[in-house]
Every structure is written in structure tokens, then in C-alpha cells.
Length: 186
Image (cartoon, rainbow, N blue to C red; front, side):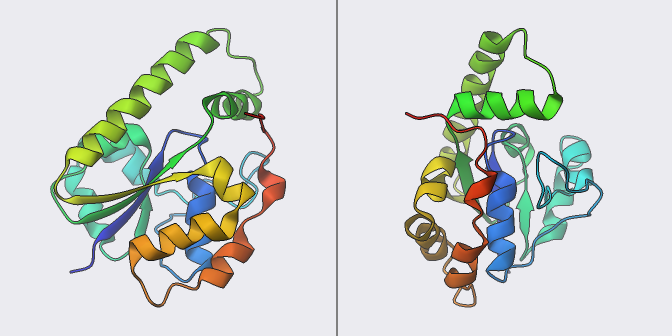
């Protein structure tokens, strides 16, 4: 039985980029193709709509994705049933996450500080929960560092997944720094 590979993080944290990189490296990614590429994610969202909509009510639905890479946003991790998971959790500068959300929605978040606090709380809760689960191996990856130094950070993913068929060179080539548009200097 192969583990289910989960890519997670806050919305707009770079999960789609990691899904794209893993697909380029040769892994089977789960996507239903319903959410089409757009200005916010020109290379696609790599989502399965039923997971987003139904995970809370039907947690065992995730078991249909054995041996594949599945994107589950941070909030959804709490609904994963017992199983065998390798979780790549993507973190990103919170201000960039919020900037990206505002750009995607085409409007300024009038309650940005409230949203920021809620996202920080969700991020910390999700990270705490997944590190406590015995059925999850977890790798935290930084979006900003991955774009700044793709090879070093994708090597971490390569070692973590221990999949000899995964093509590191194709993964590195798939990183598109031009998509790092809401950039903040730290």
C-alpha cells in the first residue's frame, strides 16, 4: 500500500506550484480539471473539487487517492481519516498570502488584520495537529525559499518522498519564478 501524498498549506501559499512541480517530476497528481487556469494560477490549481466540498462529510473519500498526490488546504487536514500520509506543508510569508488573496479577489480586504490573525491561528493549529499524528510524515517547505533556491528546496522534497522515479531535474525546471508576483522583502 502506497502512502497518499498530501500537499497542504494556507490558501495562496504555493500549494499549486508544488503540485505542478511534483507532476513535472513524474508523480501522478489528483485533479479533476474543473477549476481552469486563470490569471491567479496560470498553470492550474491542481484540485479535486469533491475533496474541497466533501471531505468533512465523507473523510474516507481521500482513501481513493492512494499512490497519488492530493491537494488538501490546511483547514481540511483535520478531516483526514486514519491512513498512511506523506504531507508536504507549504508555508509562505503571510503578507504575501494576503496580497495574493486580495489580487485574486480583485478587492482590498477591509478586515485584513482580522483575516491575518485567523490565518495565523489556522496555520499554527494545522501544523500542530499534523505533527502529532502518527499516520503522517510531514515536511515543511517554504514557498519563498523554494522560488529563491529551487534545487536546494526541491531536493528536500525528493529525499522526503523517497521515490526513485521522481525526476529532480524536471522538478527544478518546472519552477517559474515569474509567478512570484506578490513578493515582500523580509
